[in-house]
Structure formats: C-alpha cells, structure tokens
Image (cartoon, rainbow, N blue to C red; front, top):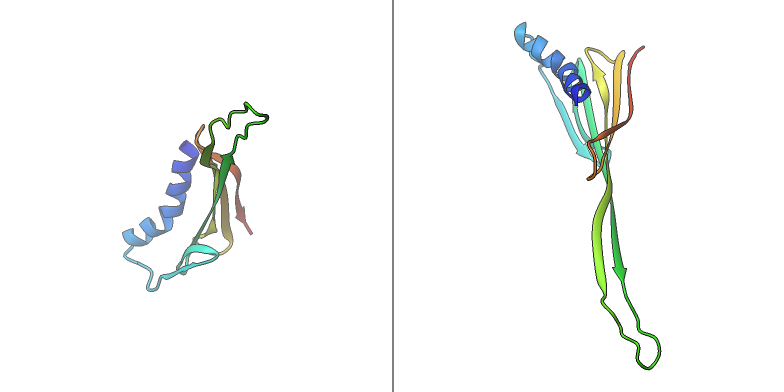
Length: 119
C-alpha cells in the first residue's frame, strides 16, 4: 500500500510543482478509446487500461435410470481477475514509468510488473 501511495505522489509531483510556480500547462489532451483513458501535457503523460475477466458457469444435474432424480441445477457468475495497466512519463518523455496491477477478491492488489526508466 505504501508503494501505491508513493506512486501517486510521484505522478502528481509535476502538477503540484507547476501550481507552485504558476506555470500551469496551457493544453491538456484527453483521450478515451479502445486503448484506454489517457491524459497528456507537455511534461506529463498518464494512460490507464483495465481488463476484466469474468466467468459464468451453469451446472445441469441429470438423473439416470427409472428412479433417477434430476437434482438441483445452479449457475454462478464471478470475476476471477481484474488487471490495470498504467504507463506514461513524468517531467519529460525521458522519465518513463509502467505499473501493472492484478486485483483479486481474496487479497490486496498485487503488483505484477513495475518499472521506472530514465532514458
């Protein structure tokens, strides 16, 4: 959880620094398409993509023989996995970041992949 708070602080740093120096970005490009949700300014880019995996099962019990009982049929719908992919850059395109989170109902979110690159 601390790493998630640290990531949010790093991602918000350019906006907070610009606000302190009254150098707010002039233009923010926002997009929502099949690649996900994106925000882009001169010194910051944030892209968010989420994938949801779901499963529906139906159990049909059939009786066999002359005295067979059909039993009880049931169905089940669940989400075994939800994944979130966040990537972009901060300050300028040479500082790139990527974070891949896997959400599950039984546990806290798991960081599947994370990196920060200065190229």
